[in-house]
Length: 338
Image (cartoon, rainbow, N blue to C red; front, side, top):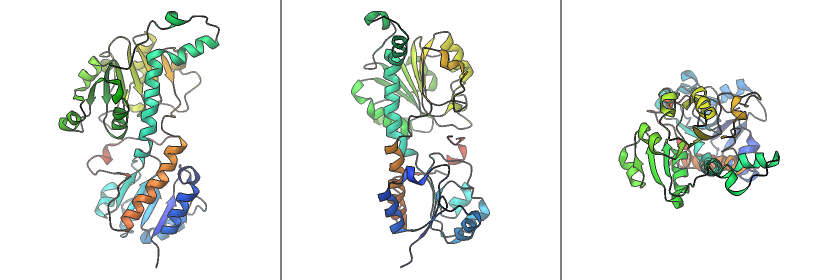
């Protein structure tokens, strides 16, 4: 029996990063996998596309290419974001599912966000650096600005995969949690035990604010100077989603003035320039875009790909990967991670 053809072109992702030997064997046992990482050949890719069952990767696929592939059931983005590299209306008209692996990173980013929050709540990194540089201050001399996460007012901006994973993680801290997400009805937020809130209310009332919003035309510089000024004095801000949602110049001014603390994992320019002024601030924990990209998260991508392609082969809908929504996918303004 002929196996369905899967075209594998994962760049900038790497096969050995996302597939264990076992999951790669599982994929190749179930499908006729043409590996263009091992043997790049754009002409061969275009020639085989009309017979393909699925594409794993994020190559450019315009409307003509998609119309040439009537049996293409899935395009699986294994980088982590939905990009404007596909003619999405043509894909949907073709009956092609566009799937993303963003859910693979949710738990890793959630745990990292919790770690960042505890760090800026207690000055852990700051005092580590101070002690290494010769400070002899101990006990209360180093804790005047420390606060507890337990019982604190928490604001979550964006309640997709990351927001939900994080919310579950902080449940034992007994927080009063407000959630702002204009793409969700209030009933969903009510059902979690949290308080649906406007952006302004979330910023004004929260001791800790977690930015999980994705980048869209509407969310660019969502936290601008005006919104940042709504934060409480001494508030803790954790940024782990997309740099485009924050005005970094305005944020820098307020951090330099000592108005708040921040932990930042995403940056307008990556790698972070050596002379970036954020690097000189001791009320900022600097992280080099490393919240989600850990081996366990990467290897889960391969497992998710196998699970959902097998389901689609058997005439069932995907269950693990994120399905691109026609109403949302063209709004995203995500950029590839270097």
